[in-house]
Image (cartoon, rainbow, N blue to C red; front, side, top):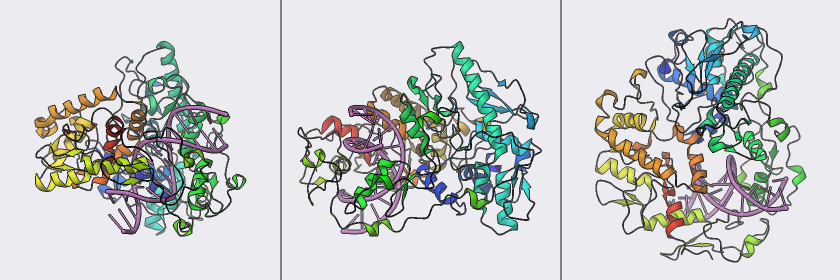
Length: 590
DNA sequence: CAGCAGGGGGCGT
DNA sequence: CGCCCCCTGCTGA
């Protein structure tokens, strides 16, 4: 349970979400959760905290954070936001609306929805949160249904919480709790609650949009704008289709459909040689041409025989939460039977050691022909189908400072940093080619903790955590701050000295955002995605790879090498992209 | 520091 | 649907 996320405390978000997704994949196939991570945004009453048990606080966080992630496969809608703090449209009415009719089998309206905050509030208590969390909360706290049952034959254990079953499996059966992973994901009662709340949300949003046909304040709708393909004009910057699970938005339905598939568990395609699974056919081809290029590629063999077809454009319009993939069903009985664990397990078998199969070829095919350095005339490799091998040792991207050349533009960007050293220490003359090295420098030489997102230097981890929370709305699992103190701009006084600095940085970021180019937007979108949610807080330990690149297009773009601006240091090594685009077009491609 | 594979988005057909 | 491009994490030198 979520003692760590209970009233008066806030669980933290510190896990790199890329890792999280990998962890999810692992956990879904049977590993035990071992990483404590919390998901904030919902405050739960003491009743929930009394649920199972003897978990330690960090395990509560796991139970509430990772359990939701692991058991669902993905975080609840809205969680995957760069800025997790719910956005409130100042122009919107701040009103909670409940459904007209109660959910029949539950005899409750479950929750009301606030379109301004894009949050739900439990109908039976004051809990507020995103849809999935409130649905889980209500089912576990206020429903009489013990919707989650132990999957083991003959065991009558049931709980209103999936994590209760997980705990039961581990405690009473000494079984792998991952066997219950499917419970939350495939639970009909929870599905029904979710659909019910989703309908309410859609209705409220639709009504709101009808009243306010062009608000101009649709940014951030990615977390909540309807289900699946929300075509109500609530997209990011007016995009027509907005993902419910991440900030993605697009005007093209086919792109949206394709995007939706990344939030699904199934990977309908596979490499028929190594059995590795993919969610896109073109990825199979790319994989094939990288790994098995000496074998004939057969498009007709890449679709897994037992795979469900990927969502088509025709089906994607139906409201669908990304991790509640079951089709609408009859309202479930109060007690819901659960399927055996095995039935929910994908028939995935880990691919054999792919790398061992790899032909001993040198630098490979022109997998990526970056735009930055496209030659005036396409190279033979670029003009050829990807299957055409480039000559061994062929160089493509050359450094303008040395004789180095690399296989792709990204290598060039990284290499250029070794010359430009764009990560400058604000306290001395030190410059580093990589963010993590600067972080290590700052930590060891100046005994400071550097913020990954702005120039702020904290005296210690706690201060950094305060800063991240107050200035960047990023919660640290090392910082448990009473909710009431949030947003005060200087919790505990620890932040008072640097609030201005952080604010300035944010202002700079905001100013830079307007200049973001297309690629900048893409980077921003990616950065604003799940990974950013979890990735920063351990950064100050000097392990720089935990840093996520800030949306650096405008705000943190390093100055040209001779006079680097106070670039705010801790970008990853990809501080170079825009910089390079602006200043190094003379780096030619062979 | 760099090579590489994988994954995701945009775009053209 | 396929291609191109970008980005990230992993890994080894």
